[in-house]
Image (cartoon, rainbow, N blue to C red; front, side, top):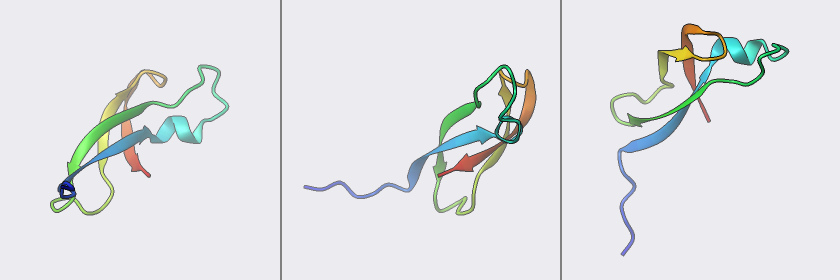
Length: 64
């Protein structure tokens, strides 16, 4: 039997500062994987997380 599609889905959060500064020498973009409830947060998720490339807490946004 097929399983029903759950309410919680896996999303990827990406650093907004690293993405805009692609030519940085450190290289790389910070990404986090997390789950969100589709019913409670239908729009894109935004969280302040630590970026090891920027070495500070910055805004991470959900990407597709």
